[in-house]
Image (cartoon, rainbow, N blue to C red; front, side):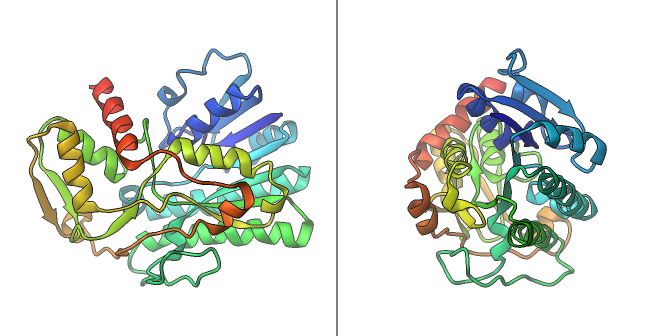
Length: 321
């Protein structure tokens, strides 16, 4: 197959690119490198089945040519990371909504199957856990910029499902829950690489909020394996599907685990969200996925433990140092 990956120079996209190339597919990556990096693709740059195009997904003429020539699309291009979203809400909204408008319109025009990456952020402050795909969404005030990301990804989902319902376009929506692994950057607020980087140099690990909030960190290899199966699953078409793990840990305990695994002398410091981000911030205490649907569709069970995932991130960050 000739596969197009938008945002393929990003953390998840680069791992997906490698997996597809290993499976014998032709892969074209389009990325404007605003948050992605060519370093993530260094292992495949010389592969004759790989092609890279530096361009924004909002550039209609380029995207028309690329989608015309592909067989299917993995649409991963998006503004990512809490810090980026808080600091640049206009970029977040424009990239996520208009970029998806362009990609979905062209996928529909050429009849290309498309998997759209979404996020657990769309569940907002819903306190009912685990989060089921059909649960209600509860968002905070519009003065909290972090909810602009959730809203923009909800619009992406609505649009993808509308194309399926109205035009029969084969669309699949995947909601990612805190995907982690090598190549993920802490630059935009991703908590695991940020903690690991500080631990490795003995700096104070700053915990935002109370530290009691819990998250489920899923290894990128489990996520990529799920995407490859879902794109070939007829029953997944027209569905919204959680992708993640149910192994949960508090942010405070995560910091302790990383300090122990790195043998670090780092201490911990709890700071308010306002001190961390320079403005008021809204958060959710628990984020836990219901994986019943993805298990029924493809028999999905996450394989890689949190400890192994953290070892991979620690080894990767050490190699970069």
